[in-house]
Length: 114
Image (cartoon, rainbow, N blue to C red; front, side):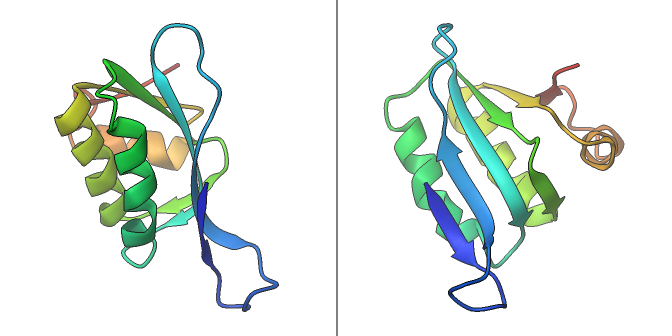
């Protein structure tokens, strides 16, 4: 699990986090992405993504239930995972995140689970 401290200092909640969750039995690597994923947090999250993809899984799923914000840097992180793995599923995406994926024309690459 990796986090980025928020502007409130060390006692503040982590601003962004990427953590590997227990497997779902299908061979899919499941990662929880939470907080605010932006240009300042992606470089800190990248090593955790690299570790998750080191074993070359067939597919990866991102649980976005606790994702508060994501800018284009976060989309780039997801696209990198799709490029390296092939199949990427976004679980528990909020309505704004769903719309962002749909409006950007990425729903064929970043599949949003219903």
